[in-house]
Length: 122
Image 1 (spheres, rainbow, N blue to C red):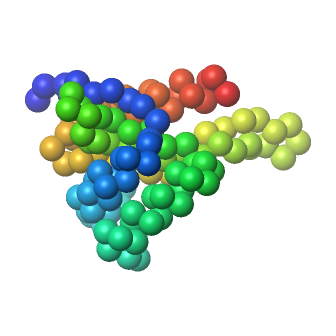
Image 2 (image 1 turned 90 degrees about the horizontal axis):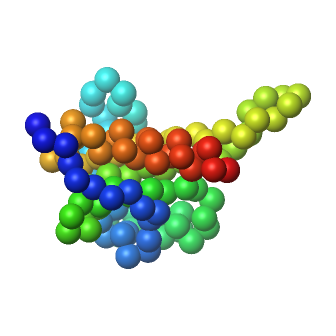
């Protein structure tokens, strides 16, 4: 399979419909690293939640966009500190989603590399 030609960029409010579609396209209940299903996968609810998360700026959100600027991947992380005595900055990745048609093409890897670069900058 050919590597995907994507650009990694910060999320934008205009991405919300694409983020909803991406989230709904991923089966979170199956696979090796599966978790629990979404409590509410209604499109309006997800759009509202993404809007709240983006406006609160409490999470780092990066998207992978293809040549036509279609969102094909999402990484969500939060800046934190670890260590009880001497706190060390850390970046915790909570979500890494890639649309099924772009899996195994390097998109997830590029999102993680971008997160590492952000962590190093901060």
